[in-house]
Image 1 (tube, rainbow, N blue to C red):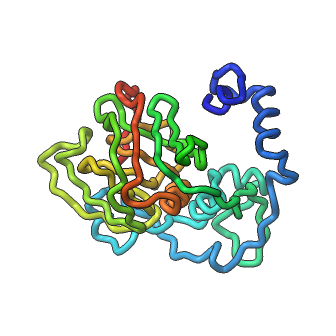
Image 2 (cartoon, rainbow, N blue to C red):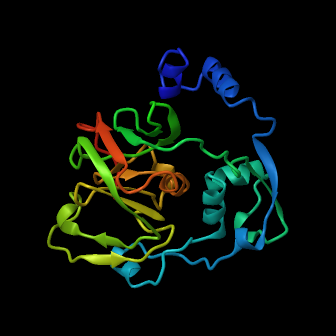
Length: 263
C-alpha cells in the first residue's frame, strides 16, 4: 500500500498487474529473481533439534538454535520452507548436504545503503519501518509488527538506547498482557528461535524495543506485546545502520486490532 501511494497508484494493498509492473520498473527489472545456489558447509551446519514449547523448559537450554535445516534455509534465503520446496520440485530440505544445488530467491548480496540514517519512523497503521536520511529520503524499508490494541506500542518519539546482538530474553509475566502475573520470571537463552530474535535494540521507554523474531511468517500479520518486530534478517540489517541516540518516532499505533500476540 505504501509503495502504491508513492507510485501514484490506488493504495489498495493488493498486488494487481499495474503494481507488479511498477515494482519491476522500480527494481530495475532484475534478470533473475530465482537463482541456483550451491550449498556450503556453513549453509547446512547444525546442530538441529526440536525445541520444547514451554518457556521454562526453553530457559533450561544453552541456546535456541534452528529446529531443522529446513527452518535455517528458509531464514537464510528469506522464504518459507514450503516455498523453497516448491521452487525445487518438492525436494526434502532436511536431507540436503554441502555441495547440493538449491534454487532460491535472489536475496543475497543486497546493495550497500548510501548515506547515514538520521531517524526511524514506525507506522502502526501501515505496518512498516522507515530508516530516513536527514533530508527525508527513505534509506531502508521493512515490514513490521506492532502492539495490539490491548498491549499497544508507545506513541511519540524516543531514541535507540543500546543494540545487543544474540540477546537473552527476560520473560516477565507482570508486563505481558496475555500471561498471568503470578507466573515466575525466566531468562531465555539466545538464538534465532529466541522470541526477540537475534537483535534487540532497546528504546528510551522502559521495556520497549525493536527486535527480530522466531516466527518470520507472522510479521505484518500477528500483533506483538508492544514492541516492534522485524524478521531476523531485517533486524540485523537495521542494527548495522543505526546507533545509540538515533531518533525513533511512532505514529498511528493506537487501536491496532488484536491478533495472535508475541513479544
